[in-house]
Length: 249
Ligand code: B12
Ligand code: SF4
Ligand code: SF4
Image (cartoon, rainbow, N blue to C red; front, top):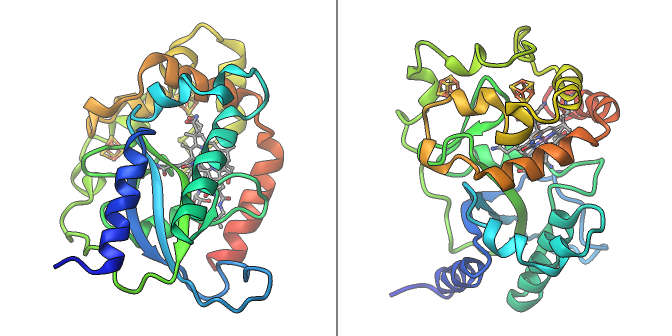
Protein backbone atom coordinates (compact mmCIF):
# COMPACT_ATOMS: atom_id res chain seq x y z
CA UNK A 1 0.00 0.00 0.00
CA UNK A 2 1.33 3.46 -0.87
CA UNK A 3 2.11 5.85 2.00
CA UNK A 4 0.30 9.18 1.97
CA UNK A 5 3.54 10.88 0.96
CA UNK A 6 4.22 8.46 -1.87
CA UNK A 7 0.66 9.10 -3.05
CA UNK A 8 1.31 12.86 -2.87
CA UNK A 9 4.44 12.38 -4.99
CA UNK A 10 2.36 10.49 -7.52
CA UNK A 11 -0.17 13.34 -7.56
CA UNK A 12 2.66 15.81 -8.10
CA UNK A 13 3.99 13.71 -11.00
CA UNK A 14 0.54 13.70 -12.57
CA UNK A 15 0.15 17.46 -12.14
CA UNK A 16 3.57 18.05 -13.75
CA UNK A 17 2.86 15.83 -16.73
CA UNK A 18 0.48 18.35 -18.28
CA UNK A 19 3.31 20.89 -18.37
CA UNK A 20 5.87 18.48 -19.82
CA UNK A 21 7.78 18.50 -16.53
CA UNK A 22 9.21 15.56 -14.57
CA UNK A 23 10.37 14.71 -11.08
CA UNK A 24 14.09 14.43 -11.79
CA UNK A 25 15.01 13.37 -8.29
CA UNK A 26 14.34 13.58 -4.57
CA UNK A 27 17.10 14.94 -2.35
CA UNK A 28 17.61 16.03 1.19
CA UNK A 29 18.73 19.59 1.95
CA UNK A 30 21.49 19.98 4.54
CA UNK A 31 21.45 22.54 7.34
CA UNK A 32 22.43 25.97 6.10
CA UNK A 33 21.49 25.32 2.46
CA UNK A 34 18.03 26.84 2.71
CA UNK A 35 17.10 30.00 4.51
CA UNK A 36 14.35 29.48 7.13
CA UNK A 37 10.88 30.29 5.88
CA UNK A 38 10.48 33.60 7.70
CA UNK A 39 11.37 32.16 11.05
CA UNK A 40 8.66 29.53 11.40
CA UNK A 41 11.32 26.99 12.33
CA UNK A 42 9.93 24.44 9.87
CA UNK A 43 12.47 21.60 9.62
CA UNK A 44 11.37 20.72 6.08
CA UNK A 45 14.29 19.16 4.27
CA UNK A 46 12.96 16.98 1.45
CA UNK A 47 13.46 18.47 -1.99
CA UNK A 48 11.58 17.23 -5.04
CA UNK A 49 13.61 18.42 -8.03
CA UNK A 50 11.48 19.23 -11.06
CA UNK A 51 12.67 19.84 -14.60
CA UNK A 52 12.60 18.98 -18.26
CA UNK A 53 14.01 15.89 -19.92
CA UNK A 54 14.91 16.88 -23.46
CA UNK A 55 12.36 19.30 -24.90
CA UNK A 56 9.55 17.78 -22.85
CA UNK A 57 8.26 21.12 -21.63
CA UNK A 58 8.69 23.00 -24.92
CA UNK A 59 5.16 22.41 -26.36
CA UNK A 60 3.50 23.61 -23.12
CA UNK A 61 5.89 26.48 -22.54
CA UNK A 62 5.92 27.77 -26.13
CA UNK A 63 2.10 27.86 -26.08
CA UNK A 64 1.98 29.68 -22.73
CA UNK A 65 1.01 33.32 -22.12
CA UNK A 66 4.47 33.92 -20.63
CA UNK A 67 6.20 32.89 -23.86
CA UNK A 68 3.82 34.87 -26.02
CA UNK A 69 3.85 38.07 -23.93
CA UNK A 70 7.28 39.12 -25.21
CA UNK A 71 8.47 40.16 -21.75
CA UNK A 72 11.88 39.32 -20.25
CA UNK A 73 12.63 35.90 -18.70
CA UNK A 74 9.49 34.10 -19.92
CA UNK A 75 10.74 30.64 -18.85
CA UNK A 76 11.43 31.85 -15.32
CA UNK A 77 7.96 33.42 -15.11
CA UNK A 78 6.33 30.26 -16.49
CA UNK A 79 8.26 28.10 -14.00
CA UNK A 80 7.28 30.38 -11.13
CA UNK A 81 3.59 30.23 -12.02
CA UNK A 82 3.60 26.44 -12.09
CA UNK A 83 5.91 25.99 -9.10
CA UNK A 84 3.98 28.43 -6.90
CA UNK A 85 0.67 26.83 -7.85
CA UNK A 86 1.89 23.30 -7.08
CA UNK A 87 3.48 24.42 -3.82
CA UNK A 88 0.19 25.99 -2.72
CA UNK A 89 -1.80 22.93 -3.79
CA UNK A 90 0.40 20.43 -1.94
CA UNK A 91 1.38 22.54 1.07
CA UNK A 92 5.03 22.75 -0.01
CA UNK A 93 7.46 25.58 -0.70
CA UNK A 94 8.82 26.29 -4.19
CA UNK A 95 12.50 27.13 -4.67
CA UNK A 96 13.89 28.29 -7.99
CA UNK A 97 17.27 27.92 -9.73
CA UNK A 98 17.07 31.56 -10.90
CA UNK A 99 16.47 34.79 -9.03
CA UNK A 100 19.87 34.83 -7.31
CA UNK A 101 22.52 35.51 -6.41
CA UNK A 102 22.74 33.86 -4.03
CA UNK A 103 21.73 30.85 -6.10
CA UNK A 104 20.19 27.74 -4.60
CA UNK A 105 22.73 24.92 -5.18
CA UNK A 106 20.58 22.88 -7.56
CA UNK A 107 23.47 20.93 -9.05
CA UNK A 108 24.73 19.92 -5.64
CA UNK A 109 21.23 18.80 -4.66
CA UNK A 110 20.90 16.90 -7.91
CA UNK A 111 24.10 14.98 -7.24
CA UNK A 112 22.44 13.68 -4.09
CA UNK A 113 19.48 12.32 -6.01
CA UNK A 114 19.38 9.29 -8.24
CA UNK A 115 20.89 9.29 -11.62
CA UNK A 116 23.11 12.30 -12.39
CA UNK A 117 26.89 12.59 -12.43
CA UNK A 118 29.36 15.39 -13.10
CA UNK A 119 30.60 15.82 -16.69
CA UNK A 120 33.65 17.66 -18.03
CA UNK A 121 31.28 20.36 -19.39
CA UNK A 122 30.14 21.20 -15.82
CA UNK A 123 26.64 20.22 -16.80
CA UNK A 124 25.43 17.11 -15.08
CA UNK A 125 24.91 14.03 -17.13
CA UNK A 126 22.03 11.60 -16.71
CA UNK A 127 22.42 8.03 -18.01
CA UNK A 128 19.20 8.33 -20.02
CA UNK A 129 18.74 12.06 -20.73
CA UNK A 130 22.44 12.80 -21.15
CA UNK A 131 23.27 16.52 -20.95
CA UNK A 132 19.77 17.40 -22.12
CA UNK A 133 17.93 18.11 -18.89
CA UNK A 134 17.58 21.12 -16.59
CA UNK A 135 15.86 22.07 -13.37
CA UNK A 136 12.89 24.43 -13.34
CA UNK A 137 12.11 24.39 -9.61
CA UNK A 138 12.23 22.34 -6.42
CA UNK A 139 9.38 21.62 -4.02
CA UNK A 140 10.45 21.60 -0.40
CA UNK A 141 8.55 19.86 2.37
CA UNK A 142 8.80 17.65 5.44
CA UNK A 143 8.21 14.48 3.45
CA UNK A 144 10.09 11.85 5.39
CA UNK A 145 8.31 8.95 3.68
CA UNK A 146 9.80 9.40 0.20
CA UNK A 147 13.43 8.37 0.14
CA UNK A 148 15.74 9.18 -2.75
CA UNK A 149 16.36 6.05 -4.79
CA UNK A 150 19.90 4.71 -4.57
CA UNK A 151 22.11 5.55 -7.54
CA UNK A 152 23.72 2.57 -9.26
CA UNK A 153 27.49 2.76 -8.71
CA UNK A 154 28.44 1.88 -12.29
CA UNK A 155 26.21 4.31 -14.15
CA UNK A 156 28.51 7.35 -14.62
CA UNK A 157 28.76 7.66 -18.44
CA UNK A 158 31.83 9.94 -18.45
CA UNK A 159 33.94 7.42 -16.51
CA UNK A 160 33.75 4.94 -19.37
CA UNK A 161 33.89 7.48 -22.22
CA UNK A 162 37.43 7.12 -23.52
CA UNK A 163 37.46 9.59 -26.44
CA UNK A 164 35.53 12.40 -24.71
CA UNK A 165 34.27 14.01 -27.94
CA UNK A 166 32.56 16.79 -25.97
CA UNK A 167 35.98 18.27 -25.19
CA UNK A 168 37.00 18.46 -28.86
CA UNK A 169 33.89 20.03 -30.35
CA UNK A 170 33.91 23.63 -29.13
CA UNK A 171 34.99 26.05 -31.90
CA UNK A 172 36.62 28.38 -29.36
CA UNK A 173 38.09 25.78 -27.00
CA UNK A 174 35.93 26.94 -24.09
CA UNK A 175 36.76 23.75 -22.14
CA UNK A 176 40.48 23.62 -22.97
CA UNK A 177 41.69 24.68 -19.55
CA UNK A 178 39.67 22.40 -17.30
CA UNK A 179 36.84 24.87 -16.66
CA UNK A 180 34.36 26.64 -18.88
CA UNK A 181 35.29 29.94 -20.53
CA UNK A 182 31.84 31.49 -20.60
CA UNK A 183 33.16 34.78 -22.03
CA UNK A 184 34.73 33.07 -25.06
CA UNK A 185 31.56 31.05 -25.59
CA UNK A 186 29.35 34.10 -25.40
CA UNK A 187 31.59 36.08 -27.79
CA UNK A 188 31.40 33.23 -30.31
CA UNK A 189 27.60 33.15 -30.11
CA UNK A 190 27.40 36.91 -30.55
CA UNK A 191 29.77 36.86 -33.53
CA UNK A 192 28.02 33.93 -35.23
CA UNK A 193 24.28 34.41 -34.68
CA UNK A 194 23.48 32.07 -37.59
CA UNK A 195 26.11 29.48 -36.65
CA UNK A 196 25.51 25.97 -35.38
CA UNK A 197 25.92 26.75 -31.68
CA UNK A 198 23.40 29.60 -31.81
CA UNK A 199 20.83 27.77 -33.90
CA UNK A 200 21.15 24.08 -32.85
CA UNK A 201 22.62 24.51 -29.37
CA UNK A 202 26.06 23.97 -27.87
CA UNK A 203 28.26 21.86 -30.21
CA UNK A 204 30.07 20.31 -27.23
CA UNK A 205 26.76 19.13 -25.83
CA UNK A 206 25.74 17.77 -29.22
CA UNK A 207 29.00 15.81 -29.51
CA UNK A 208 28.07 13.68 -26.51
CA UNK A 209 26.51 10.38 -27.60
CA UNK A 210 24.59 9.87 -24.35
CA UNK A 211 20.90 10.77 -24.45
CA UNK A 212 20.99 11.63 -28.15
CA UNK A 213 17.23 11.07 -28.38
CA UNK A 214 16.75 13.90 -25.87
CA UNK A 215 18.71 16.59 -27.72
CA UNK A 216 16.72 19.81 -27.59
CA UNK A 217 14.66 20.57 -30.63
CA UNK A 218 15.87 23.54 -32.64
CA UNK A 219 13.43 26.21 -31.40
CA UNK A 220 14.04 25.18 -27.79
CA UNK A 221 17.84 25.19 -28.19
CA UNK A 222 17.74 28.55 -29.90
CA UNK A 223 15.61 30.00 -27.11
CA UNK A 224 18.24 29.07 -24.49
CA UNK A 225 21.17 30.25 -26.57
CA UNK A 226 19.50 33.64 -27.18
CA UNK A 227 18.94 33.97 -23.42
CA UNK A 228 22.55 33.02 -22.72
CA UNK A 229 23.91 35.60 -25.19
CA UNK A 230 22.40 38.43 -23.16
CA UNK A 231 23.25 36.93 -19.73
CA UNK A 232 25.69 38.94 -17.65
CA UNK A 233 28.43 36.35 -17.75
CA UNK A 234 31.13 38.59 -16.27
CA UNK A 235 29.06 39.14 -13.14
CA UNK A 236 27.94 35.50 -12.91
CA UNK A 237 31.52 34.29 -13.34
CA UNK A 238 32.69 36.38 -10.42
CA UNK A 239 29.73 35.39 -8.28
CA UNK A 240 29.93 31.75 -9.42
CA UNK A 241 33.56 31.47 -8.34
CA UNK A 242 32.87 33.15 -5.02
CA UNK A 243 29.81 30.96 -4.36
CA UNK A 244 31.57 27.76 -5.33
CA UNK A 245 34.56 28.61 -3.15
CA UNK A 246 32.35 29.54 -0.22
CA UNK A 247 30.04 26.55 -0.51
CA UNK A 248 32.42 23.82 -1.71
CA UNK A 249 35.61 24.30 0.30
C1 B12 B 1 25.48 30.98 -12.58
C2 B12 B 1 25.00 29.96 -13.58
C3 B12 B 1 25.56 29.97 -14.84
C4 B12 B 1 26.70 30.89 -15.23
C5 B12 B 1 28.01 30.15 -14.82
C6 B12 B 1 29.03 31.07 -14.24
C7 B12 B 1 29.92 30.37 -13.21
N1 B12 B 1 31.20 30.30 -13.51
O1 B12 B 1 29.43 29.89 -12.20
C8 B12 B 1 26.51 31.02 -16.76
C9 B12 B 1 25.57 32.22 -17.04
C10 B12 B 1 27.77 31.15 -17.58
C11 B12 B 1 25.72 29.73 -17.05
C12 B12 B 1 25.57 29.21 -18.30
C13 B12 B 1 24.83 28.08 -18.60
N2 B12 B 1 24.14 27.33 -17.73
CO1 B12 B 1 24.02 27.71 -15.93
N3 B12 B 1 23.55 28.13 -14.07
C14 B12 B 1 23.99 29.02 -13.24
C15 B12 B 1 23.17 28.92 -11.93
C16 B12 B 1 22.07 30.00 -11.99
C17 B12 B 1 23.90 29.07 -10.62
C18 B12 B 1 25.16 28.21 -10.47
C19 B12 B 1 25.78 28.55 -9.13
O2 B12 B 1 26.56 29.48 -9.02
N4 B12 B 1 25.37 27.83 -8.10
C20 B12 B 1 25.79 28.07 -6.76
C21 B12 B 1 26.64 26.89 -6.30
C22 B12 B 1 27.14 27.08 -4.90
O3 B12 B 1 25.78 25.75 -6.35
P1 B12 B 1 26.31 24.28 -6.62
O4 B12 B 1 25.16 23.50 -7.21
O5 B12 B 1 26.92 23.72 -5.42
O6 B12 B 1 27.49 24.57 -7.67
C23 B12 B 1 27.72 23.95 -8.87
C24 B12 B 1 27.62 24.88 -10.06
O7 B12 B 1 28.03 26.16 -9.71
C25 B12 B 1 28.57 24.22 -11.04
N5 B12 B 1 29.22 25.17 -11.97
C26 B12 B 1 30.26 25.94 -11.74
N6 B12 B 1 30.56 26.66 -12.85
C27 B12 B 1 29.68 26.31 -13.82
C28 B12 B 1 29.55 26.74 -15.13
C29 B12 B 1 28.51 26.23 -15.91
C30 B12 B 1 28.32 26.68 -17.33
C31 B12 B 1 27.59 25.30 -15.36
C32 B12 B 1 26.46 24.78 -16.18
C33 B12 B 1 27.76 24.86 -14.01
C34 B12 B 1 28.81 25.38 -13.26
O8 B12 B 1 29.55 23.52 -10.25
C35 B12 B 1 29.18 23.58 -8.88
C36 B12 B 1 29.45 22.27 -8.18
O9 B12 B 1 28.51 21.27 -8.54
C37 B12 B 1 22.59 27.46 -12.04
C38 B12 B 1 21.23 27.26 -11.37
C39 B12 B 1 21.42 26.92 -9.91
N7 B12 B 1 20.74 27.65 -9.06
O10 B12 B 1 22.18 26.02 -9.59
C40 B12 B 1 22.51 27.28 -13.56
C41 B12 B 1 22.76 25.88 -14.15
C42 B12 B 1 24.00 25.28 -13.51
N8 B12 B 1 23.03 26.18 -15.55
C43 B12 B 1 22.55 25.31 -16.36
C44 B12 B 1 22.67 25.38 -17.78
C45 B12 B 1 21.89 24.32 -18.58
C46 B12 B 1 23.44 26.35 -18.40
C47 B12 B 1 23.62 26.53 -19.92
C48 B12 B 1 23.99 25.26 -20.64
C49 B12 B 1 22.31 27.16 -20.44
C50 B12 B 1 21.93 26.86 -21.88
N9 B12 B 1 22.38 27.62 -22.80
O11 B12 B 1 21.18 25.91 -22.09
C51 B12 B 1 24.71 27.61 -20.01
C52 B12 B 1 26.06 27.13 -20.55
C53 B12 B 1 26.32 27.82 -21.86
C54 B12 B 1 26.37 26.89 -23.02
N10 B12 B 1 27.51 26.73 -23.60
O12 B12 B 1 25.38 26.29 -23.39
C55 B12 B 1 21.80 24.21 -15.63
C56 B12 B 1 22.60 22.90 -15.57
C57 B12 B 1 21.72 21.66 -15.71
C58 B12 B 1 22.54 20.40 -15.70
N11 B12 B 1 22.14 19.43 -16.49
O13 B12 B 1 23.49 20.29 -14.97
C59 B12 B 1 21.55 24.89 -14.23
C60 B12 B 1 21.47 23.94 -13.04
C61 B12 B 1 20.21 25.69 -14.39
C62 B12 B 1 18.97 24.85 -14.54
N12 B12 B 1 17.85 25.56 -14.67
O14 B12 B 1 18.94 23.65 -14.55
N13 B12 B 1 25.16 29.23 -15.91
S1 SF4 C 1 31.14 12.95 -24.49
FE1 SF4 C 1 31.80 11.45 -22.96
S2 SF4 C 1 32.94 12.66 -21.41
FE2 SF4 C 1 31.75 14.09 -22.64
S3 SF4 C 1 29.86 14.39 -21.48
FE3 SF4 C 1 29.46 12.74 -22.99
S4 SF4 C 1 29.92 10.83 -21.90
FE4 SF4 C 1 30.82 12.50 -20.70
S1 SF4 D 1 27.94 26.96 -27.22
FE1 SF4 D 1 29.55 26.64 -28.79
S2 SF4 D 1 31.11 28.14 -28.23
FE2 SF4 D 1 29.83 27.87 -26.43
S3 SF4 D 1 30.78 26.24 -25.20
FE3 SF4 D 1 29.25 25.25 -26.53
S4 SF4 D 1 30.46 24.64 -28.33
FE4 SF4 D 1 31.68 26.18 -27.26
